[in-house]
Image (tube, rainbow, N blue to C red):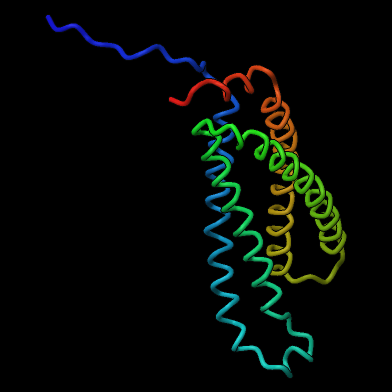
Length: 180
């Protein structure tokens, strides 16, 4: 009967933080695709908007292009750092801590803004005179705003925990071990 040959024993135990980093990487990849596509669409719209339309108050597609490029670049950096952390690159641990803290603060700030928008939409919906189609559309938008706020509020403690655990002695020792 053949005997199975086993490799060397793994030196790093199961780590829950690695699952969070995987999820973070996948969400950053989705964000990269969304914002890269938005940048392409915005770049195409630059030539279609005249100077007269811009003077009349039409939003400038160059501003939207810059925001889309900034978000796509941030998502790409996040992907690169999370992949490096999953490959046990020591430098990525401290960079990922900073990214997690920045995202936690950003999520808190944007959740606060979206909650204010949610309340404003609620005040508009309470007014009489809205058509049934407008009422249904704005109710749907208000639900989406609330879902975004809830997801961000759930993400904030998870990202803060990730930043904390990446600074713990146990994780620092895991990163100090030789790469597999």
